[in-house]
Image 1 (tube, rainbow, N blue to C red):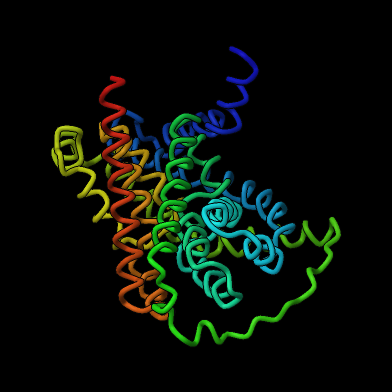
Image 2: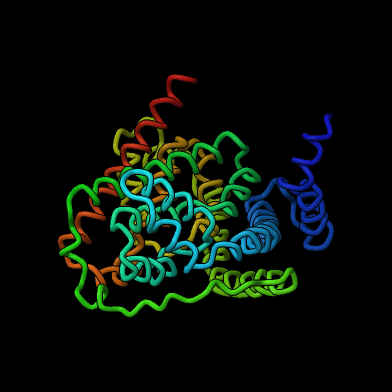
Length: 334
C-alpha cells in the first residue's frame, strides 16, 4: 500500500474510526454488523463523528484563508471586474465562503447595495451554499476525488452560467428599492495578526458547527435508514437508472428540504450504495443546498417575484441538465 493510499484511508476515509466504531457496536452494544440495527447504529455513529471532525478541521482552515477576504475587500475585487469575468470571480469567491443558502443572502444584499453587477452577485449566491472547500474535502472522504471534483466543477459552472443569464436579462429593476438604498460604508480593511486569524477561525468553527449540527444529525439518520432499512428495489424503482424521471424527482424532493451540503452527504452516500446514479444524487444535493424553501422566502424579501422566479427556473433547469448529463456519461462509461 502506497503512502498516499494509506493517508487517504486514515485521514480522509478515517478507517481507524470505522474500526473503533465497529468494536463499539459489536463489543459494547452487542450488536452484529450483519443486522439492520447493528449496521444502522454503526452508520450513524461513524458518519456523525467523521463529519464533525472533518467539518471542524476544514472550516478552521477555510476561515483562516477567508480572513484575507473580508466583505469590504471582496466588494472591491468583484466591483472592478465586468462581464463574464465578474461571474467567474463571484462563483469562485463563493467557494471560499462556507455558508448555507440563508446565510449567503445578507452578503448578497451587501454586494448589490455596493453596486456590484447583479449577475456576479447571483453567481456568488448560487455557488456559496452549493460548493466550498469544506464540502470538497468531505465529498473526497466519502466518494473519492473523482466525484468530489465533478460536483465542485459542475456547481461552479451552474453558478457562472446562471449569473450570466440573469445579468443578460437586465433584471436590476426587479431588486427591491430599499436594497439599493442600503448605506454602504467604505471601511478600511482591518489588519489582522496571526493570533487574530486563529481566533476568527475558531469562532467560525463554533458558529457554523453550532448552526448545522441538527441538519447533520437528521441527514445521518435519514442516510442510516435508507442504507439499512429501505429495500434497494424500492430506491431503484423511484430513483434508479431505469427511471427516466429520477433526476426530476430527486431535484424536486431536495428543494423543500432545508439543510446544507454537510447534512446531505450521508443521504447521498446511502443513495449511491443503493444503486442511484451519480447525476441523480448530485441533483438532489444541489436542490437541497441552493433552492431550499427558507432561503427562497428570505430572497423574496429583497427581490421581486419575477427575478425570484427567474432565479429558481434558471438554477432548477441547470441542476436538471447537470443530473441527466452526468447520468448519461456514467451510463456510457459502464
